[in-house]
Structures are given as C-alpha cells and as structure tokens.
Image 1 (cartoon, rainbow, N blue to C red):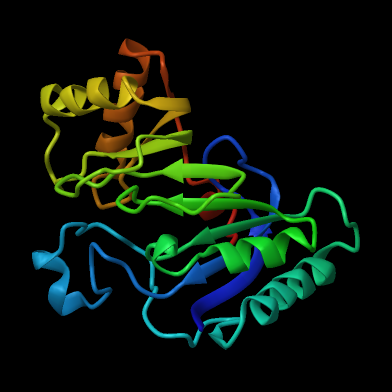
Image 2 (image 1 turned 45 degrees about the vertical axis):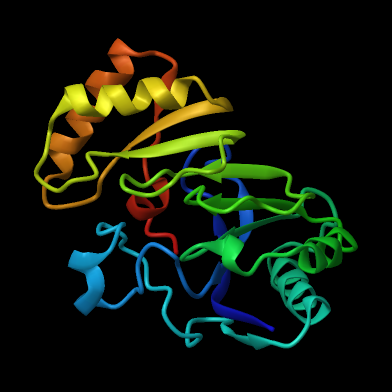
Length: 221
C-alpha cells in the first residue's frame, strides 16, 4: 500500500528541470521529522515548509497497488496534456524513498513516464529512477553519494551565516558524483540575507549554481 498526501500537475520550480511540466506525487512520512510542529525542535530537519502528514491533500489517499497509483498519476497527466511524450513525474515528500519501490517504478514505465525523485539522501534508491535530486540535511547520515543533482539549502541553521562552516560542507559534496550542484537560499524571515549568502558562495565557488523556488514567485502549487 502507498500513502499519498497529494498528487497534482504543475511546473517544476527548482533545479535543472525548472519550468518543466510535471506531475508531483507527494508521499506521506519522513525519516528526519514527523511533520508535527510539536516535534520540530527535536527533529534532524527543522526547516521543512511542506505538509506531508496524512492523505487529505488534492489527489491524496491510500493506494492498494502500484498499478492503481500509476494509473492515477497517468490520469493526472492526461488531464493536463494528452501527449504520450515527455511524461514526467516527480516523487517527493517527506521522504519518497520510504515508499517508492520497484513495483511502482515498473508500473509507471508502462505508461512511458520519466521518473524523478527529490530525496534527503539517507536511503539508497531502487533501480530505474531517471533523475535523482539529493538535498542533504545537516545532522543526517548521507548514504546517496551520486545522482543527477545535489541541492543544498543555506544556511540550515536559522539565523546562522557562518560561511566558513558551509564551505567545508560544500567541499565534501564537490567530491561526490553529481552532474549539477545547486545552492538554494532558505525561505525564512531572513530570505534576503540567505539569498545574498548563496549568491556570494556561487560567485566564489562556480561549480555551484543558484536554485530559486520559481513556483513560489509564480504562485504555482
């Protein structure tokens, strides 16, 4: 069984595929935070701004089989675009690799979907995923050391602008096998300062590119 918070169509707002038409499928659950505000201060990841608790979102629910969920995702795509080419689904969460498995991947391949995930990198994924975006969280054990893009949020400690500590982490990531390296400013009350920090680091370490949350500025889901 798969428990889904929401399924919706939109444009990808971040990273290499920004602007691409997509079906987003958000799984419930995460291994770095319960999703409950009462647990935030004790969580490894304390800055998440996404509701991934329950299955009451648009298109959300419990799906008994991979084929049932894959069919629902395909129907969402068809409502947006009748084309059978360039079909793209992004699995996110929470942490999608708590639920995404080979059965669901194979079911989606029958519908000719290109499959992407946005993961915290603490779980090794099954084969068959076409695009892997890893967003490391300070304090977690990063196991997934390769993929298509790595997206690091700065700074991960609210109100902390210690560039020296951040650069130490970035140097470690730079040794890993990723094709694209992105910095993203934490969306908080200090967004202006965080954005300035990210831009400064990108200028100093040009292997890194700035990723902005375009979907927020465009008022997309």
